[in-house]
Image 1 (cartoon, rainbow, N blue to C red):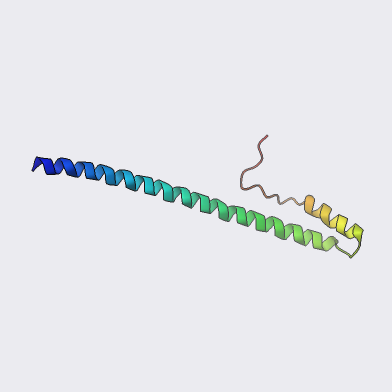
Image 2: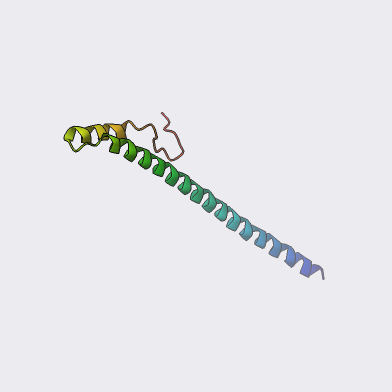
Length: 87
């Protein structure tokens, strides 16, 4: 009877170890997917605000195109992947 209990302890240890590895993997995947949604949202905000600001400047001339490009490059909504540049 004692031998059976010792074997069960080993099985519990293995099951716990495999479950812990799987849970850490799922947690890492959830964090990565969350960062992807945040990056997508930031990119969409930047694109929307830059296109609206640029379209206001367009008037069919080369000067309008240069003003539109200047508006895009001076857009305050910067896309930084939720991590400000260090330096």
